[in-house]
Length: 372
Ligand code: SF4
Image (cartoon, rainbow, N blue to C red; front, side, top):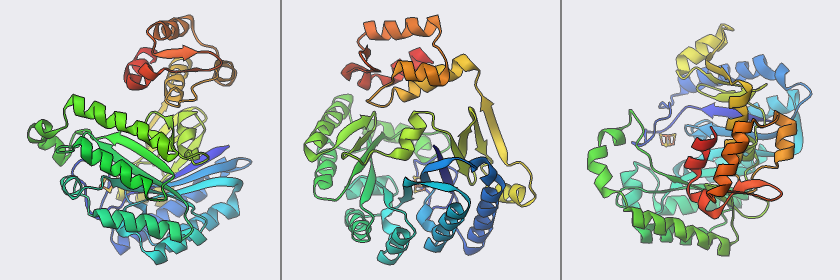
């Protein structure tokens, strides 16, 4: 089983907290990009021979900046050349303000049945501060458009630790979820990434962040999601039964994936590599059949095992150590020792599977740091 990731680098405008490589799309850039992406697929498709594709993800950037016909053509190309699993999950990321009924229906007829909206918050004062173009009602309407267009697997991203955000704001966002046909939620905290407008304004914005006690209350509110039918299945992800993200589970369980498009990551034959960021350079390299990889890393075995273990521990199901060893190799004495220490500190528990405890969920970063 393998996954595919397609990176669409276009955004209507740049959110001030965002550190991803994005640019404003124009018809000529879209044509250039589309040509290069299709060619990159042609160049790499031999790698997919004999493999079954279990998830396809269109991420960005803002994938909905590309015409819907682009996805129909790309999925046709993949179908003609590869084996797609019957239950393959096909996801597109979208910004709520971009989605029209016609566009959503085209996605649906192209077999895209999962959509992930970058909602972030439902409060106008937070949406303004985050530089988001959507209003609360736009988000609600977009979710309705997706659902009535037969896209029934709907995920949203929500943020916490946003300047001026109150516990009530966060509670209200969760209450909105109750009234909407949402099947999956990813929760993130805002971070001040280098080279972003937010980073430049950090001294001004940091005092406006919720206090630690408020953040704790916001996170405690997440327990209410279980009353709405959601189950936490990864540190930052909640899903209704059967709606866990197959694609993301692949990242956490070392499923091989191929990335396409500028700045797309891949993990293939235990090698992690990344495409060139810059759109024009990426397109030129593809056009001239030159390598477009700007970073590649083959971790030595011990480092790889540690990293895979730490990443898989993000899932609440944890790790079946026997299966893990059979798949990736045995654990060193040192790693066994670290695991035992984390168990002694009540951060991990091990019965049939090794997993985070309640306390470990709150201190995952320390667990990962100790393992890696
Ligand atoms: S829409 Fe997403 S990718 Fe685009 S600038 Fe905003 S946060 Fe970054």
